[in-house]
Image (cartoon, rainbow, N blue to C red; front, top):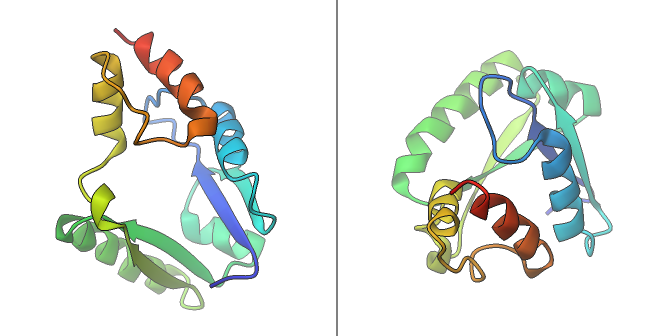
Length: 135
C-alpha cells in the first residue's frame, strides 16, 4: 500500500509499559528487519505533529473488533480536524487474531502460559523473559 512505512512508537510518560521506548524500538526493528521499506522511530506529543514532521500523508490503525472502531474513528476525526491533509486508514486483523491484545499476551506470559503463537519468533524469548519477571 505504501512505498515507505514508519512504525511510530509513542513515548508516553503517563503509562508504565513493560518495555522502555528504546527496548520497544529494538524489538520492533528486529521483528521487522525483513521489510526494507519499514522504519521504526519514536515520538512524543501529538501524532499529527509527528506526522507533519516526517511528511506522512496517512496513518494506519488496526481494528480487531467493532469495539475498537468507535475509539479509533473518534481519534481519526480529531486528527483530521487538527491536520486535514492526513488520512487515517483502518485495517482489520486476521480472524485468528481478533481476540488478541497486548494485555492478554502479558497475562498469559506472567501466569506461565505459552505465548509462542502470539508474538514473532525472533523476539519471543526476550518478551517471555521480561514478562516472566513480572510474577
